[in-house]
Image (cartoon, rainbow, N blue to C red):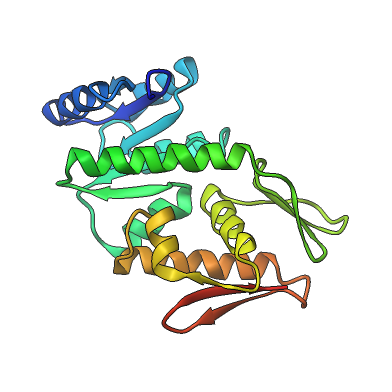
Length: 227
């Protein structure tokens, strides 16, 4: 099933890099292993991988810097960060940059593979989604843009687009907080919940030109998009 999927893996710990590469290859992924961020960026430009697994702490160019540069030219490729960092601000920064998932070391290979498959499935979902109208807004999920009437288009981040997609899909119904955290963040822990709150706030600001649209917090359950 995965024989045509190419993953770029940037990991500066040689032993760990080889373990991850070999484990993914047993699942029929093609893996391009790089030992630093500079090399990873060159491989990204030349080989066109379909998913990135990036260690945060790398020589020459760290994973966050690498992701920022890639997001300037590619808003859609899924990115998973691997890191020993566990501070809330680091997790939030990773998602704000445009990361799609965040896996703390040490981790199990099975967990990484599940997260990779989840992201690939979400990418397929994105490619087949149609343009949606929310009151006076036009939401283009494949291009990750939001436009109010004839105003200038607003570019959304990968995570903002996916979160808005699920809010619209459950319009006027409660979007279960735990379910969406597990689907988009891979878990429903404190760090992920804080990150989701940040993205909800950003979406509210981007939708505030139309007072018929609200994203309300349903305490203890989740969020509801009302329009």
